Length: 93
Ligand code: SF4
Image (cartoon, rainbow, N blue to C red):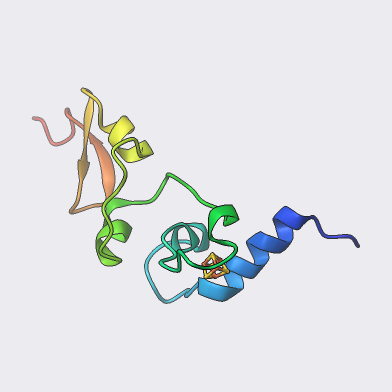
């Protein structure tokens, strides 16, 4: 079976950096790969759906236009405690 270049790069990056015992799914860990001088860095698979707790663990700051920042909006807030978006009404009597 022929493998696409995209799938080959994804598989290579995953095997390179993914640690199932560390926080974050493989795509989050590859997104936060610190090896900017790697030849695959610019074409590595990335995601903008990384929990703040994962950014925090790796000592990274989420980009201002990350999906979490956009989701916060006026109707909810991100709880660093639970790692979830919570509605303002949650916990109200
Ligand atoms: S960009 Fe390079 S160093 Fe980073 S995960 Fe991919 S292959 Fe590994």
